[in-house]
Length: 404
Image (cartoon, rainbow, N blue to C red; front, side, top):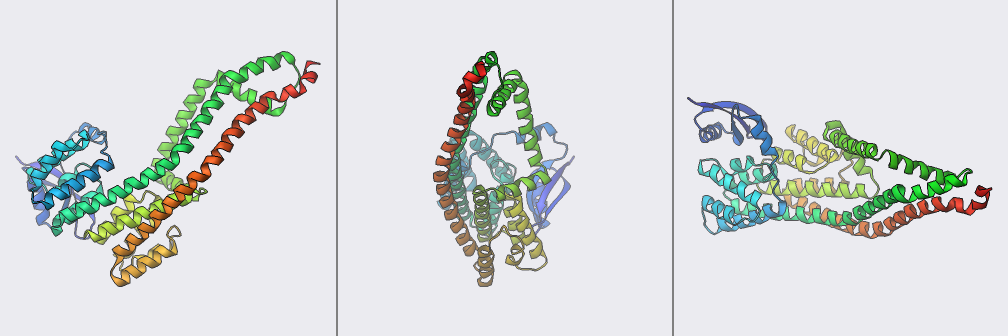
């Protein structure tokens, strides 16, 4: 008896569709869907346990750097004349990352059963995102899979490099902030109580800064577990709020308005937008699907809204650049360069130039941010610790009056 399979596909316009078919295997379902003019994304047997899906999403995520290496090696093997299955078998054996090696082996098994490479990869979203799957599918259709894989490798390597630069810039501030928290906690827990008992014997009224410091110390020493629980609950609540649609929109808007860091967030999102959109267009992905994938990869809801507006405009026959002008997050330079790219038929090249420009802007901003943060954080550290010490010793300046 045939089983029922639920599927997700995209039509020729790039629209996502869902449905169900009865067949003896996933291969037959995939072939039927292709005959209907659809591009299969996911095919699963109906009635699969929720536990299995839950475990699937809890699997460790493959590192971008390892995926970039896999893409380059895969492209080289295909270009050398090795078959798809042989290449996947070799890559599964030689990949050092065990998580990625297992995924590659599962992809090989699915391809061996008759699934296309893009369809097999789509079943592993924690390793191959929608951008990757869409480009592989375009490479399969156009017969240029090796070229597309090289483009993917370059794109991923640039993403890794950009993340590394931003993380490097944030390492020092995070370390100093952690040091400040540790010093303040140690003083409130151990140093301030010693002075509190001393000043209690002297009597008199303590200066306001000292009283505030004593109150903070009392709260921390007596209610430390409660303070920790409240702090953890606040962090969890904040994360849950950010995951909501309204919370994410508010959070991303706030990030764009932050001093200095707002510019970094904006330019990073514009870099992702330009690079992703360019590589999808160059790979032959339909423009509506390319815009949808790009909107999911920019990493900021405000920028995502602009891309969605472009997608809606294209559906109505408008140009790509015009809707962007209504969203201030896209600078006039980006809008004008995209308009010129549309007119000349070289939109992907213009987007590459935009991406390159903002990559350089991000690098310059990260370098300047590092040089500015170091002295600023030293001042914060000195002011915090120094302020606490001054507050503790202020009564000493009036010690004679306190004794009387």
